Amino acid sequence: MRFLRCAAAVLLGALVATPAGATLMPGDSTRMLEHGGRLRQYLLHVPPSYDGTTAVPLVLDFHGFTSNAAQQRGISGMYVLSDREGFLLVHPDGVANAWNAGLCCGNGDIDDVGFIRAVVAAVAAEGAVDGARVYATGLSNGGAISQRLACDAADLFAAAAPMAFPVPARPLSECRPVRPIPVLSFMGLVDVLVSYDGGLFPSAPATFDYWHDVNGCEGTSPDVLVTQGDSRCETYTKCAAGVEAGLCSITAATFGGTFFDGHILYLNDDFVLAEVAWSFLSRFRLPDAPASFRRATLEGATRLKLRGRSVIAEDAVWQLGIGTGTWWATDAADHAFAGAARGKGRHRSLALSTDAATSLIAALAESAGVDPAMLTVDGDPKLRVTVGRRARLTGTVRVAGAVTGSFRLKLAGSLTP
Image (cartoon, rainbow, N blue to C red; front, side, top):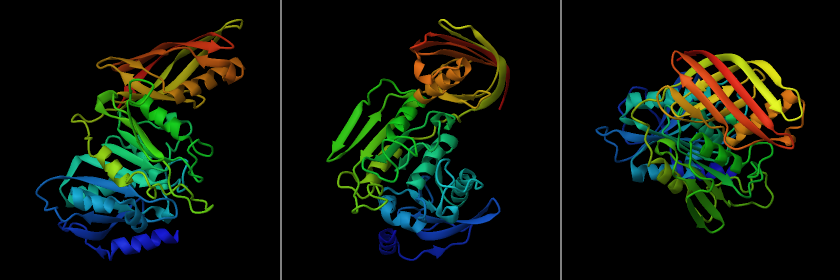
């Protein structure tokens, strides 16, 4: 996109490569890092106020597909905020101008989550980084990798503000954060490249619902709504562990029928997105106690009883993960489930996300040989896990719809870190 390159050229100036291990000084530099057998690059901005005596936040701002770090720095607005607010700012470069973020955009053999972890470690080794205040944001494919970091690196990132991309997984329950994590997603109401209502990728409302569910947020309607012009931001503020889940629906600029009409969300008349993102991100810190995550292979049996049909009793093997306030599982047919885990100590109650409930209905419909449209989950499933040396997962799910009945499961297995 030529206009992005022009913006980057105007706003950035020259970058000077700085040797690794040097003391951080205010200004711009290019850093090189070997990871996964490749020499990778990221841009580092150190604000004028930085003197190394006080630990400061770190923001990673990711470019979109076919773009690069310099272009993202030139258009996102985070560069100006870094100087004003005093946080360190990193713009990494993806391999072949792309990030491996699940549904988007290729590079399936690249460990970008590992690379990003290494970048954070490298900056922290050079400078005074507040390890409890590391944040992710980015546009398009950069928004996708920001969503993926919320899913896969919630132990490192305190919060995320992804732009122009939903959770890059289908089903969404393949997103498995080890703890509730604050996420404010920004999606384009008139975006023709990544549709707000879904299609090739999940919808904005589905992503909003997922973060509401996995973060254990209260209520079914956001408790904060801010409307400006043709755009709005909605937020659930009463969530587990003091986190929040939000969605900003942005009416961005169009350019007369281009493939990226409404997609460059920074270009809108209603919100300064860098300001909104930083206002959200900066309010959160990693919990003092590190998130835990344990896994188990559970074996046992399930029992599906649908009215007017024979009981279906089956041996079952599930893979289970238990985080700090979150959980996930997959059955032998790779149906994915996830949600919030409530309670402390040995006993936890497990809530299914909306997406996970859909996966469960699909699994039950396959077992019964019926159309999934005939079944729905009736009320809140009563799933419980007991965690000790072994994990025991038990529960009952009531089934409604054209066919009614119940699904019971009883599984157990050894837990590993």
